[in-house]
Image (cartoon, rainbow, N blue to C red; front, side):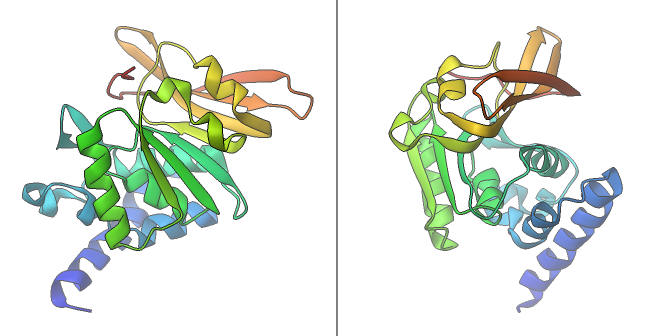
Length: 214
């Protein structure tokens, strides 16, 4: 390991210890993924030294890579299993997709902005994440050709849970999504589809995400 790679490795382990485990995210697969995925390769070069800070960072096009803790927290809420097929809405830099890919069998990710999707594709392929599939399109429509999904994660704040996402969720699965309840308030919502197809929804912590684009 080069001195630079070793330095980033140490920073990443410190990030997990102080930002994630300290805040009580202990899902084994998620913690392992956060320790492994090189977050510094998913940020613009000029922000390389800030990659492991406890904050979101701008990635261009008025979009951000989420705070490390938020990535870990939302992924843990999804409770990913090794056999799962997960849909992500909002590829962004590709970092969340990479974390998911360390936890599950297959990831499908939809991004509205083609420039971001292309850049994420290059980064993910360079890291050999070949079980991540990317698409440019309207995330509110999901990816029906590959449904049903064992879990769905949305990385932008929507006004409500898009109906197509509920339809594409497998029985027993869940959606983790930020919901904008007012112009000043967003909260994580967890939507659970029971085995009989009925839906339950619970509200989690307050958050701040970029708006959902359709």
